[in-house]
Image (cartoon, rainbow, N blue to C red; front, side, top):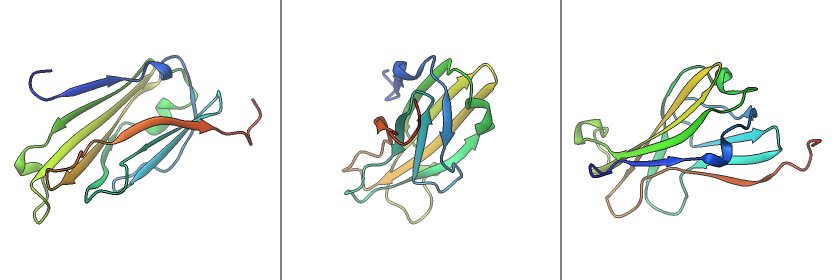
Length: 136
Protein backbone atom coordinates (compact mmCIF):
# COMPACT_ATOMS: atom_id res chain seq x y z
CA UNK A 1 0.00 0.00 0.00
CA UNK A 2 1.23 3.50 -0.73
CA UNK A 3 0.75 4.84 2.80
CA UNK A 4 3.33 2.40 4.25
CA UNK A 5 0.72 -0.02 5.54
CA UNK A 6 1.58 -3.68 5.01
CA UNK A 7 -1.05 -6.44 5.01
CA UNK A 8 -0.19 -10.13 5.30
CA UNK A 9 -2.84 -12.85 5.00
CA UNK A 10 -2.05 -16.17 6.71
CA UNK A 11 -3.86 -18.40 4.22
CA UNK A 12 -2.36 -21.54 5.82
CA UNK A 13 -4.57 -20.88 8.86
CA UNK A 14 -7.88 -20.32 7.06
CA UNK A 15 -10.24 -23.22 7.81
CA UNK A 16 -8.12 -24.50 10.72
CA UNK A 17 -9.06 -24.35 14.40
CA UNK A 18 -7.00 -23.20 17.37
CA UNK A 19 -7.06 -25.56 20.35
CA UNK A 20 -4.70 -23.77 22.77
CA UNK A 21 -3.42 -20.19 23.06
CA UNK A 22 -0.87 -19.10 25.65
CA UNK A 23 -1.65 -16.10 27.86
CA UNK A 24 -2.47 -12.95 25.87
CA UNK A 25 -2.56 -9.76 27.93
CA UNK A 26 -1.02 -6.30 27.51
CA UNK A 27 2.73 -6.58 28.08
CA UNK A 28 2.97 -10.11 26.64
CA UNK A 29 6.16 -10.59 24.58
CA UNK A 30 5.44 -13.98 22.97
CA UNK A 31 2.25 -15.91 22.16
CA UNK A 32 2.02 -19.59 21.21
CA UNK A 33 -0.92 -21.05 19.27
CA UNK A 34 -1.53 -24.81 18.96
CA UNK A 35 -3.95 -25.93 16.27
CA UNK A 36 -6.02 -29.11 16.18
CA UNK A 37 -3.66 -30.41 13.47
CA UNK A 38 -0.95 -30.20 16.21
CA UNK A 39 0.98 -27.45 14.41
CA UNK A 40 2.45 -24.81 16.70
CA UNK A 41 2.59 -21.15 15.69
CA UNK A 42 4.58 -18.45 17.47
CA UNK A 43 3.98 -14.68 17.53
CA UNK A 44 6.95 -12.63 18.79
CA UNK A 45 9.63 -10.11 18.03
CA UNK A 46 12.98 -11.65 17.07
CA UNK A 47 15.50 -10.95 19.85
CA UNK A 48 18.91 -9.51 19.18
CA UNK A 49 18.14 -5.90 18.34
CA UNK A 50 17.53 -2.95 20.66
CA UNK A 51 13.79 -3.08 20.13
CA UNK A 52 10.88 -3.35 22.55
CA UNK A 53 7.80 -5.13 21.22
CA UNK A 54 4.87 -6.13 23.40
CA UNK A 55 1.12 -6.60 23.18
CA UNK A 56 -0.46 -3.18 23.73
CA UNK A 57 -4.11 -4.26 23.62
CA UNK A 58 -6.40 -7.22 22.97
CA UNK A 59 -9.82 -6.40 21.51
CA UNK A 60 -12.39 -9.19 21.69
CA UNK A 61 -12.62 -12.45 23.63
CA UNK A 62 -9.81 -14.92 22.92
CA UNK A 63 -12.30 -17.78 23.44
CA UNK A 64 -14.12 -16.62 20.29
CA UNK A 65 -11.22 -17.67 18.07
CA UNK A 66 -10.74 -21.09 19.67
CA UNK A 67 -12.45 -24.37 18.74
CA UNK A 68 -13.90 -22.92 15.54
CA UNK A 69 -12.54 -22.70 12.00
CA UNK A 70 -10.66 -19.49 11.23
CA UNK A 71 -12.38 -17.42 8.54
CA UNK A 72 -9.79 -14.64 8.66
CA UNK A 73 -6.15 -14.50 9.82
CA UNK A 74 -4.08 -11.49 8.85
CA UNK A 75 -1.69 -8.85 10.08
CA UNK A 76 -1.62 -5.17 9.30
CA UNK A 77 1.53 -3.16 10.10
CA UNK A 78 1.90 0.59 9.96
CA UNK A 79 4.24 3.18 11.38
CA UNK A 80 3.04 4.71 14.65
CA UNK A 81 2.50 8.44 14.95
CA UNK A 82 4.96 10.30 17.21
CA UNK A 83 2.20 10.90 19.76
CA UNK A 84 1.66 7.10 20.02
CA UNK A 85 5.22 6.52 21.28
CA UNK A 86 5.52 6.52 25.08
CA UNK A 87 7.64 9.33 26.52
CA UNK A 88 11.26 8.36 27.02
CA UNK A 89 11.31 5.77 24.22
CA UNK A 90 13.14 5.84 20.91
CA UNK A 91 11.63 7.90 18.07
CA UNK A 92 10.49 5.06 15.79
CA UNK A 93 7.57 2.68 16.31
CA UNK A 94 5.34 0.31 14.37
CA UNK A 95 1.86 -0.95 15.18
CA UNK A 96 1.15 -4.54 14.14
CA UNK A 97 -2.48 -5.63 14.33
CA UNK A 98 -3.18 -9.38 14.17
CA UNK A 99 -6.80 -10.00 13.21
CA UNK A 100 -8.47 -13.39 13.67
CA UNK A 101 -12.13 -14.16 12.95
CA UNK A 102 -14.31 -17.26 13.33
CA UNK A 103 -18.08 -17.67 13.16
CA UNK A 104 -18.12 -17.08 16.96
CA UNK A 105 -16.43 -13.68 16.83
CA UNK A 106 -13.17 -11.88 16.23
CA UNK A 107 -10.06 -10.79 18.09
CA UNK A 108 -7.46 -8.15 17.31
CA UNK A 109 -4.10 -8.39 19.06
CA UNK A 110 -2.35 -5.02 18.81
CA UNK A 111 1.44 -4.98 19.20
CA UNK A 112 3.70 -1.93 19.51
CA UNK A 113 7.34 -2.29 18.43
CA UNK A 114 9.71 0.56 19.31
CA UNK A 115 13.31 1.10 18.15
CA UNK A 116 15.85 3.76 17.29
CA UNK A 117 14.73 3.53 13.65
CA UNK A 118 17.57 1.31 12.45
CA UNK A 119 15.78 -1.99 13.17
CA UNK A 120 12.54 -3.59 12.09
CA UNK A 121 9.81 -3.21 14.69
CA UNK A 122 7.39 -5.70 13.15
CA UNK A 123 6.26 -8.76 15.05
CA UNK A 124 6.78 -12.22 13.53
CA UNK A 125 4.10 -14.90 13.25
CA UNK A 126 5.04 -18.29 11.86
CA UNK A 127 4.63 -22.02 12.15
CA UNK A 128 7.51 -23.32 14.27
CA UNK A 129 6.76 -27.04 14.41
CA UNK A 130 4.43 -29.79 15.51
CA UNK A 131 3.44 -30.85 19.03
CA UNK A 132 4.44 -34.52 18.92
CA UNK A 133 3.22 -35.09 22.49
CA UNK A 134 -0.42 -34.66 21.45
CA UNK A 135 -2.39 -37.41 19.73
CA UNK A 136 -3.19 -36.61 16.10
